[in-house]
Length: 358
Image 1 (tube, rainbow, N blue to C red):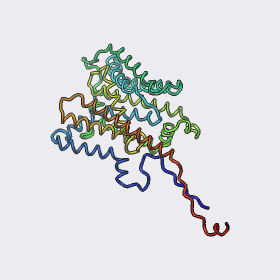
Image 2: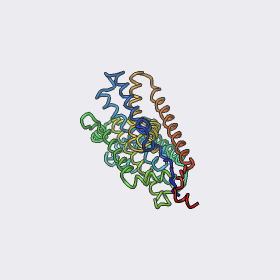
Image 3: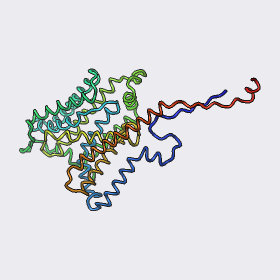
Image 4: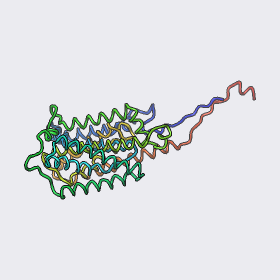
């Protein structure tokens, strides 16, 4: 007697042979939505939305957000979350300016920020991995400590380089461009490409996904879970420092102690949105970039349609985050339901030989 077994896939992506429209909606629905939003706003505001000037302004101003979204994506791949990124970017943009005002060469100031970012990430990793504190609690607490340090060194005041002691080359970090494409936007895209290559084409990326999916199972197959979690947190910290340096450069001699936390929710929103597209059910580099893009298009378009409505940005970010988490939760529930579904076994009819032998 021969037996054939049918096992349902637990992937969030549509199974092979699914209709093309199902794959389009499930995998590329956010891509389609982004294109639709762009077309709608371009038709509604053709003189201001779909212009080179608007692109340059948005690409330059949202570069910091994209880098932060990439930074928060890396720990999420390993199954952790870093809520200190918003506070970190606020600290490093202050340090990058104040170090130069104290007489430090701008290159050493940048190095100081990068080393500080790595140390912050390491401290997060120690709390999460060695002390076994929940990542949500540990990084939120670390963020509050960073916020306190920022207020301590600034006295809660806006820092202004009124004497112009900072290096001109430091300001150029955010002013260079390739044609109409701002330099910081190019940096952000390059970081996204590097992350995509690591996650999709290198063993380290597969190991990170394995750790994030099931840390115990990853250890059983020989993956050093602790090493990859620490590496993810430290890398995230360094990228936050990069974002802080570019933010300080773009602000041209002004640093504010309270500017960082406003980046936290948009960065998390982009990463969560990214998990609902391209590689459905898992955070991924391309999805994160798309998450930043759709937030940028949506907020910019709404602000041009409804000028002066300052509540639009937090409202859009909040509703988008709720939608992304809801989609992810429903998709996870669907995956668990598929995994728990009974295995259907189809038994072939006995052949003639078997019947004769009965």
